[in-house]
Length: 436
Image 1 (spheres, rainbow, N blue to C red):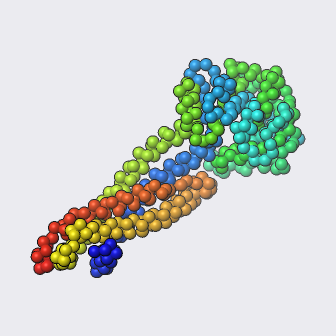
Image 2: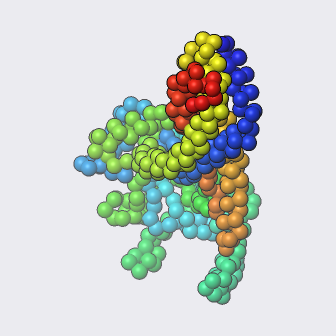
Image 3: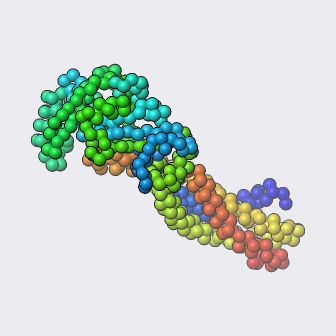
């Protein structure tokens, strides 16, 4: 019997019991979709967590927090393979005072090597990386914090009148014009134990670059980056030695590409450096979510096994009903392996069709979940902002689809294995008498 004839025979027999076959396929569809949707929750939450980490830092960045023995030296870090740049920022404490005309604000300042910053790929919203000593880069939101004295007093008055539970008053819009190419005054203060200014020096800087807006909506960037050529002049006001507590060193190593971040992280760790990178953050998180996803898939497999009972019942009844046909096929010389294959193909057909429909339903459910749940949570929140819940609750990768299809189709074939064997062992004479 040709393969095409076998397929026609199977389809003809399935049409005789459409309702029973339909209910069996429906059970397989529900089991497959349940498995995919359940597991997609684990994949979705993992994807959200990964995206959150990737947004919070540059993916090629390896932050060096310290070393077990000795100080962190920039020249030593540059010697490692795949190192593109080493950026060491010196954050000034206390905050500096920034003035532009009649507007002012207190913000965080940091001394840095602008050449290394450019090599590391400093991301700007507009402008350029400074090339002269009196040029600086400011944070994306720095201009918004430049308030007049009148605006600051009015805001503080509203703030004092706000009771607990009431909505915070709206902040002044600050400097609304483009701050690029404007000259600002930066006052570096020295404070005594009572936080009183005992010494102060003013520097004029031209803003030539504005940093890129932070990826996270709730983050605000008010800092200013100053060329480290001013370290000596700042040292005339503040004691910049680490023991004085007026500065905080922040060193980051940048790999030449993301593929080498893991190797660079491991190398620095082996050398005694305490580091934080995207790769070591993702490793611990991936381990947790792997176990979590395996648990969800295991629960989903229970539904698939339950659907297998229906397939087994359907195939057993099919063998019973086709006893005479089986006897005729064997009487005319049909190979038992062909008869077995036909019943296995029928059970596989049920499993594959159920899986395909289940996959389509799963994508629909996943899309609806990601659309509806954030909207519900946002409406229930105080602010009603959809940005607060921009979480992927369900994500279906291709690997999950393949896994679910293999499991569903595999279980369907196994369910039809015993009835198929039973069909090959049917006695010809008993079959012709319509007995089993």
